Length: 327
Ligand code: NDP
Image (tube, protein in one colour):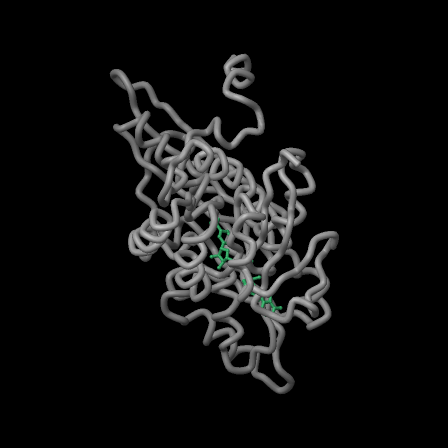
């Protein structure tokens, strides 16, 4: 077939998200899923494609045009990214900010060795938010950039809550301050403290016999995670946690406030309001898989970030079709 053949490496939240995103892309097809777990035990959402052991992935180099890496940034991608970029064109969502340069170098060397293209750190942040910060700073050099996150579920902060003695289960939402966003939108270019930009909302299930005020104090004073924020702690039942907090919403705003001419205030804003963070991130990965395929066809090799990918390459439309839509 003439469709772009996509495979998924790692079947968690992003893997499932890629599977559903591909259902909406007529020019691409899912051909396989690879997992480190027992393939026979893995049940896909929609099924219809084979699941293979990751250990056998080398057998499939000619059957896959782009491999979408859906492993975690912490321990999976530092290993899988370079190893798989030597064999396939890849796209991943590596998001450990401090380690991006080192990860890029490792993936770049592997991709060049294998004559493949690897697009790293794709998603919304890093990803679409990064691009919008760049646009803002390039277009309005006299200005200030602001990023607000949420309302969204923070995996790291939810994990921190679960480590507090007496806590059985918990989720944490990061909530942007509406007042701070309005000040930024007004063009006044405020300098905002950590506490002024976001608040934190915790929903906590206590273990039997745990003291709620001790748990609350431990949370409110936790350094790095909560001490620098206005934090609200709600105690809920295990049933309510399951029922009301299973989704993974997220989103936020990137705002550039700048001045041009004598005193013209110019505001650029990009926003996301996501019911499902992983499903959206996966949808971005799929669009960049199309770009990776096209770059590979043009004979390009090596690692790229979202900054290096021309927007037209993301679209299923041709450059000529897109030109007709400029206006
Ligand atoms: P998951 O924990 O759901 O999946 C990560 C890996 O763990 C999978 O590839 C899978 O590998 C394995 N796994 C999944 N479920 C199970 C299970 N039940 N038992 C054992 N192993 C399992 O992570 P997410 O998909 O939620 O996120 C992946 C990464 O995406 C995050 O680390 C984050 O860095 C990044 N991300 C980036 C964003 C951005 O905007 N750039 C936004 C959101 C996330 P295998 O099948 O091989 O076992």
